[in-house]
Length: 255
Image (cartoon, rainbow, N blue to C red; front, top):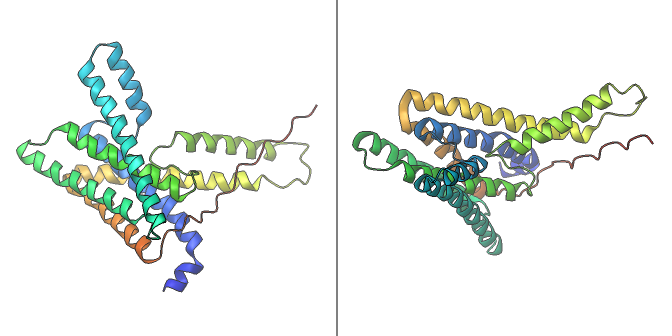
């Protein structure tokens, strides 16, 4: 079994990075919005909200926005530290970070269920759990992919997808291209970025649908997926061997 995994490792790791983890991020982010009214991986939005609240002298609300940014940052720092420690001690590099994220999401589900019944836990604590977990996952994926993929937010991915699409269309409709081959590097990157986008949207659709149907217990689905990924890292190891070609340079303009 392990030999089969080794033969197909590149495809498995690309599937994990481009399909599984973006789906988990979309699920958590969109379900968190349904539950709490905030997209917890959207640091740009939190920073803009911080400025808005400071300008309006709403310092309590500004403090909440600043806290969300800080928790995302601490989550990213935690994941990086765990990966560095595991690498130094030659242990599975990503297992502990994945398990901690699973624990945080499970804790969110448990506290949310309890809050629905007894209204004991406040919205800010639940938001903090999700922001920390999203920072942790974003840094984790960045480390696995060599800082090429970040899948808890899509601004950069959609921007790259737009650039790659225009480059391909420029080649496709260039009357002077002759027998020049298509920009294959850009096409491969575009396919990867489109897959990440589609997976995130799928997770952001399935997660809220389940949340509206069965409540906070639906958050245990991404928990189970994270535990399975941690088990895979402990068994076979996530190596970070990700075949993502660099973006090709734009063609030189005619003088």
